[in-house]
Structure formats: structure tokens, C-alpha cells
Image 1 (spheres, rainbow, N blue to C red):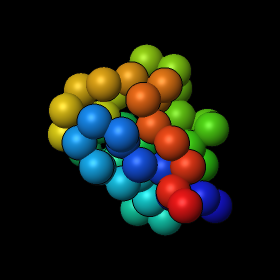
Image 2 (tube, rainbow, N blue to C red):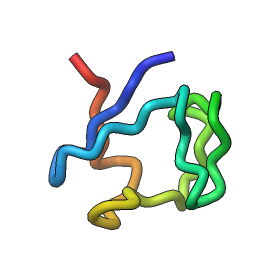
Image 3 (cartoon, helix red, strand yellow):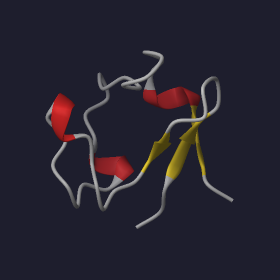
Image 4 (spheres, rainbow, N blue to C red):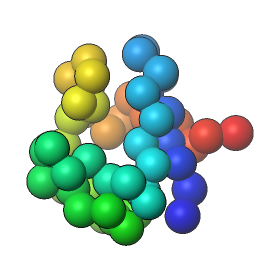
Amino acid sequence: MKKYVCEPCGYVYDPEIGDPDNGIAPGTAFEDIPEDWVCPVCGVGKDMFVEEA
């Protein structure tokens, strides 16, 4: 599974870790995160994330 980076703040969503503090279980692919999820650091939406190079 690919990692995704928040362009504004640099937070990296790692699917192996997920975002358990915000209800995203480890092993959840970025594509499977609900559309209303936001970056846990700066609060922007999924549309501000890019695939890690």
C-alpha cells in the first residue's frame, strides 16, 4: 500500500499505521478512508494529499 503526503503540512499517511486516533484502523488503504476524513495535523481534506514519490 502506498503512502500519501499532505501537501500543506508534510504529514505522511502510512496505511500500515492508519490514523487510530481518528478512527482509521491500521491496514486501511488511503483510497478506503472516508471522504470526510481530514489531515490530523492541519485539517485539510483528502484532496490535498499526493502519493509519496
